[in-house]
Image (cartoon, rainbow, N blue to C red; front, side):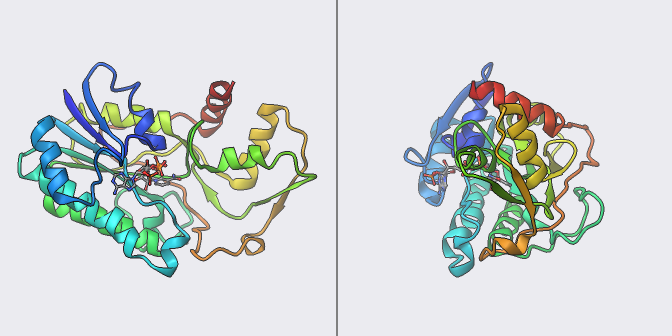
Length: 274
Ligand SMILES: NC(=O)c1ccc[n+]([C@@H]2O[C@H](COP(=O)([O-])OP(=O)(O)OC[C@H]3O[C@@H](n4cnc5c(N)ncnc54)[C@H](OP(=O)(O)O)[C@@H]3O)[C@@H](O)[C@H]2O)c1
C-alpha cells in the first residue's frame, strides 16, 4: 500500500515506521506538512496518491487548552477535518487517532466504543470535534482512541518519572486509573487495522489498567531504582484541565485487535531504553 503519515515526528508517528516497513510510506513531520493548512493537505494527498492516510498529528497540550482552546480546535478538529476532506474527495481511507479524554472519567467499568462521550476538558472537546468531523466527512474512516501514550523519545509520563528518580522521594497520583499504551504497540495495531477495511471506531490501549503510582512502582522496579514512591491524591497536583479518574478502555469491535498487557509493554520500553 502507499501510505501517507502526518505528524511523523511524534511518538506514534515515529513508531509507525517499523510496522509499515513493507509498505511505500511517505511520512511528513509538521515542518513538511502542517495539516491545519487545507491547501497543503490537498496538495500532499494529490502528490502522494495514498491508499490510506494515517494522522498521527495532534495538539496535545492538555492544560494550555483550558485558557485558550483556539489552537486545540485548530490542531485537533480543523486539521483532521482538512485530512478528511482531502481523503474523502479521492475515496481514500483515513486513520485518525483520538483519546480517552472524550469520556467523562466517571465510569466504573472499561469504556467501549459504543459508550457515550462526555469530555470534561477543552482538549477532550477538541478531540471529540475532530472525531465527529472525520466520521461525518469520510465514511472510509478508522477512528482509533488510545490513552497514556509513551515512547523512548518524546514527552511522556514514564520518562518524566525516570528524570525525577534522583529526588529523595517521588509523590505520584494513585486515584486515576488508566491504560498505559506503548506507542510501538499502538502503531502495530494500526498497521493491522488498515489491512481489514473494517471502518469504524476502535479502542486501542495497553491491556489491563493501573494508576500513575502503580505504573511508577513497576517502572522503578524494572530499572532497579530504589527511590521511595509515595501514593497521593489528585488534589495534591492541581492542574488547569480536569483529569479523568477512570480512563480504562476496552474494545468490543470485530476484528478484535488487542494490545499486549501494559506490564509487558513497560518491560519492552525499558529494554529499548537500554
Ligand atoms: N500522548 C498521549 O498520552 C495521548 C493520549 C491519548 C491520545 N493521544 C493521541 O494519540 C495521537 C498520537 O499522540 P502522540 O503521543 O504521538 O503525540 P505527540 O508525540 O505529541 O506527536 C504529535 C505530533 O504532531 C505534530 N503536530 C502538531 N500539530 C501539527 C500540525 N498542525 N500539522 C502537522 N503536525 C502537527 C507535533 O509536532 P510539534 O511537536 O512540532 O508540535 C508532533 O510531532 C494523537 O492523536 C494524540 O491526541 C495521545
